[in-house]
Image 1 (cartoon, one colour):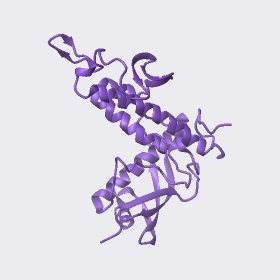
Image 2 (image 1 turned 180 degrees about the vertical axis):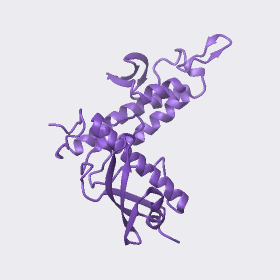
Image 3 (image 1 turned 90 degrees about the vertical axis):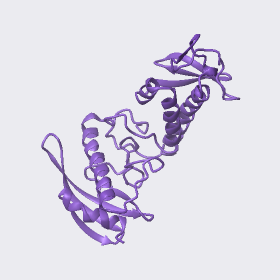
Length: 254
């Protein structure tokens, strides 16, 4: 059976790309990325197999992209953070999955062209850095349980938490919604009306009587706190690395 890299190379002509095989698990892809404004960007991408069925990609030489930039989802070794494997576990086992991989690469490089102009990541569909992504994922799951209003607010970064002595306050648009005890991780006021807005015979349901929403609210607040902590730890771990200067408001800027 062909390797993951061989499947990627096999479908390269569909993307007007040339594939130079280095080995069964390594290939160099050369192609011109067509942009919406009519420009084309020549790329030389090195692809190496990771494990049995996954592939890592990087620009062979940092010509179009910086060698390292967390803001642009380019790892410290130059490899692209194309997706988070905990959620998007793409095994390349046939031409169909190879096309899916190419689609992800194409979208990633297209977004990079937009970053160059906007000097920031151009959309909100991105994972947090390092271990913070785990807590982002947990926050998204909890927000989903509470309702679409909170999914949108989370995606738009309108939810935040503030520690006040023994409690953690969750804010939406800087307005306090509820508090969670830091020790027990339980919502302080379980008698308050549920965040989801559900109603019963006596009007809006209390948080403690609305399914799993008391637990979901606690999980959301704690996930936001840990997300913030891990994000700061990630940037601190790279404090000695130089900022590439291609994005505004980068934590690595001097």
